[in-house]
Image 1 (cartoon, one colour):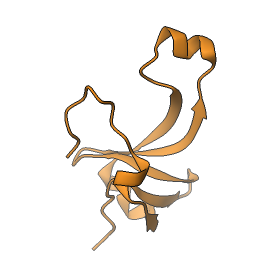
Image 2 (cartoon, one colour; image 1 turned 90 degrees about the vertical axis):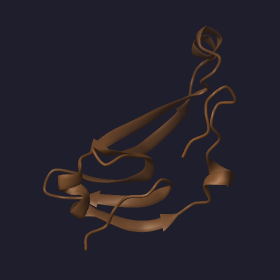
Image 3 (cartoon, one colour; image 1 turned 180 degrees about the vertical axis):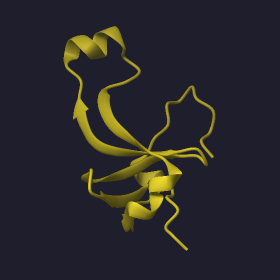
Length: 91
């Protein structure tokens, strides 16, 4: 059985076309996203859109490529990920 990504897993995606590491940021049966970088927004951007203070760069990985993902570790979702206060609870 091949690896099935889970939210907050740290993975290495290595193939002939890509070689990257990052956190699984979203998972669905249709695809998952892998967060490969995060950076702070400048003050002007925060002023224009104060609900988001960081820029997240994510790549999409479709299920036919999940066999190329290597599980490295997991993080505690309660400690690392904070949903916006006005949003519904994440599953």
